[in-house]
Image (cartoon, rainbow, N blue to C red):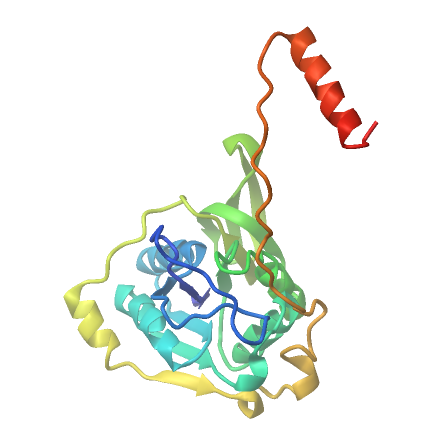
Amino acid sequence: MNIVVCVKQVPDTSDPDTEVHIDGTGKGVDQGKFSFVINDADNFAVEEAILLKEKHGGEVTVVNIGPEAANQVIRMALAKGGDSAVRLDDEKFAYSDPVATARLLASALKDVEYDLVMTGCLATDDGYGAVGIALAQLLGVPHAAYAKTVEVVDDKKLKVGRELEGGLLEMNEIELPCVLAIQTGGNEPRYASFKGIREASKKEIKVMDLAATGLSEDQVGEAGSVAVMTQYSVPEVGELAEILEGDPAETAGKLAGILKEKGLV
């Protein structure tokens, strides 16, 4: 089974002392003091892809959209068991929304033989969760989102458990090829071995710019996006909440007085 797994490099904001500042463009954050890690859900997607490869054979191709610095995330996925990698890198890709991002990922797969494509279900930096779904639409294949368990039925079909509210699993059969947006918690991502890291450092990462994708400028970045980022802003700090104490009749009277004072009633 040949699998493509899409990974994203995101800022590591796990340190509570990490401060987030809007950059000069107003459309992003200053990343100068951030360290970077693989997107959480993508890490689970990588592990699921490697588990399937170990059980059923085939190859795993890692795909990323990002600058050269993203090679660290790509090579870590290769060190865990990935076989090859593609990185899409061009300044014209900046500010691509989920649809434009999916279009770029689809372009990277035009020369790749795959049975299954995996993405994470959610990006921890921008909160987007539509890339995998949009990618399936562009590729013309079925998809399942928030997939937590994956089982091969035969060479044409998978059984997928989708996480629903309350921790329930919805079991579905889905035909190959397909796209799965992987939920966290379905497996336990492994650590890369020293041998794997050493071997990954020698593997070539194919780099594709806009020309190599075969797309035009109006299909990527802001020009190719349905949703366009206009501006980030820091929430205004408001007054602290007032806690009303007393029995129900007393607090109701106080609340009525406050609403009347504020001109709300």
